[in-house]
Image (cartoon, rainbow, N blue to C red; front, side, top):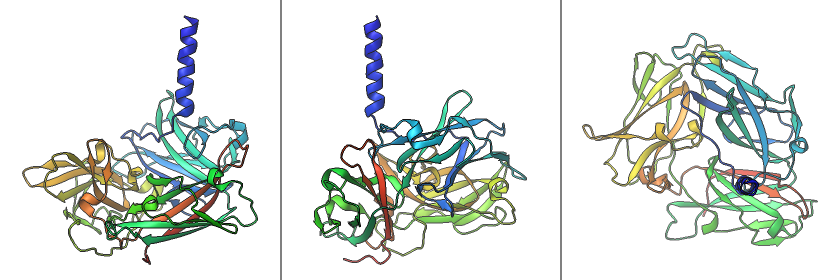
Length: 414
């Protein structure tokens, strides 16, 4: 019996040690999860070591729930690092979030929680690299988790988006050229010690991982891949604004007040076979905003936003509303239902007042997301690209994040 227990324990330990950490989606009553750095709201929480930040969210239960947090450090591949907590965290975690306020003069009752780091318990995060913050309740049930990164500015990272050289996809794809300048840092055996992550529009789920440098010039590592560093270019995001719930704003056809305000967006159509049209966007992000309020955190209301898409019904695909309002996740609440009476795909999402980017994507039976099925792919599309550079020196015990580069394809070249 003891041998069986030991075997089960070893198997469990092995699964936890070698499996990659994945973010856990929040329940329906947790909304508007945002990271904020020292200057502004972060689309993707990549922060400097020592930079203060906050994680904010709303709980729509109206019960002033108690929530707790813990922070864990991970390697490049999102497997737990070898560091013990005291090596990467000064202070303690696993404590209650004490900063929260209840909503004021809103139809939707909620409590707004604001976890700020550093605080009296968690005084500092000491190491660069990948982190996961997990929020859980009084019953130790995980509410949600979010990834974030801390970076050291040790190397300079040049990023240059270009049009692909592959003639089969030249009108639909973009590639990313990278140049890493190590300065005075001696990068030992960069083919093994350097790892890169290329991110399009702050979406970690579509990132390109671990490209190897193709050649070295002095203290520079050069990456000029084509297919391996290529992204589907997509199309500009659609947008709407609900900062004034009493008047139809940008992208909103009309509004209605029932138990909550309802915002009915203009019906959209497929853009795949239409000419590319430049439209300024914020690459899938959202910004909370409302008129005539003093505190956006607690006086901004929630509205039920009605999305409509005129499209023939797909036999083997689901259609979802897609954007950073829920961290680019496809889940039950974002799935659109086909209305055979009017020929529209329809979906209703409860969202806090503000400015939102979104698009429609398809998801096939094996879970693959395709952003181009409805929106199309156009090489001219303005996309944001970030490149993260990780380094593990010979004999080191964790992956340092030593550089960040960023560019957009607004002035893309061949």
